[in-house]
Length: 351
Length: 133
Image (cartoon, rainbow over all chains, first blue to last red; front, side, top):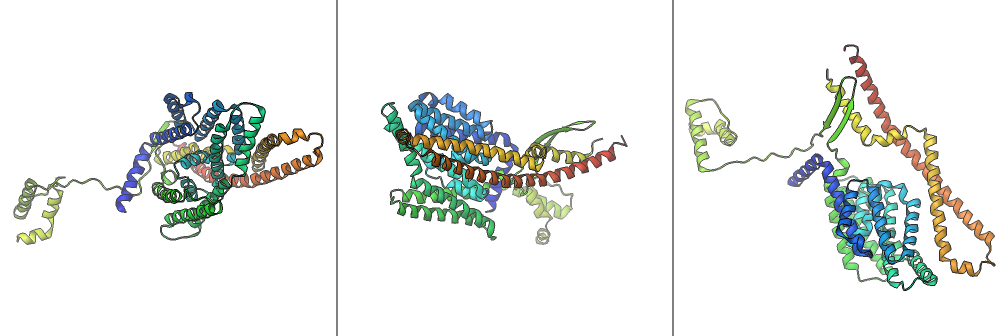
């Protein structure tokens, strides 16, 4: 456990020192995964799939606030759908706007959640988000979680709708449109998922808040994933679906593990990074770099040389001290032996 | 002469101003009632837009039926329904944002209080210093 704590301290230290670069890099990777996942799922427009475009968009999102990235992802999704079916993209825009105006605008800092849930769904571990939000956020986070789930199912429905499209007559478009709304509103699986995610979030949040004992964080995450497994089992029974149970349980266990690891390293919440500030008074301009003090000190590497030469040297020095009582000179490499020679036991043994 | 104590204080204040304090200082320019009212109006407008968009979706969904029965539809009842749901929606959104943003304002005020206390202390140090120089 100690070595883990030390490792965490090292990571923290690194993060504090290179805060700007690490954050930008993490955002870049997240954006890259997002755009690649969008391209893999609904990549209808080959121009948007080209590597320079994806890299450019990811770079842009690395250096801008999170809202820009969410906006870009929405834009890319809409453009992909536009190239396959222009009318459908209009519907997507309307639905995204409804989600924004009625729900998402109240939790601007959790914009990432909207993107992360559909993406993690494709990796089969969407449970990470409610577990994580339960561990770090307030129950208000249920709103973006639910929106994320809706977006995921919307994308799935759109994918099938696009394959259905044959020609552009009004009747056809209306038919596709009613299909989308029918399958979105009447999607019991989606509603179940939203309810269960909300449940997970509440379970984790309330256990974390209400109970006080050691490892309550880990316990609450475990309880959350247990609630998730039970909830999805019940929903599978109700909806008579049985093919994904094994994947669901595995995904839950993996999610719990991931969340526990993230929780252990939780850097963003209780850290203070290096701050560069500037201010002035009447006489001076100040450019101050404030570096936070570390709470747990990492042990310094100490190399002990044990070989014949050193041992011999140490022995002879010990001998010297015994007989001639000379002044101590402490060498870095030989510190161990010097200590030994200063020790009373050595002297007694000699005498 | 450099006063280390003062520099430490100024650094803390500057860090606060740059990070979390940005929002608090922005909020402090409003009175509470003004701020809460402004935010409530904003969310009511957003709820209105969202509601209108949902209506558009429903209209499109039912367009076949609506066009077929355009003459015989009971517009009065439909209008009452739409208006009724609209009033319910904006009431919920309005009240929720009044409560939510009041809490937010109070919290930010509390944080700002600490900031002002520190500013005052800084001023005191500053005043003690200036006569000497």
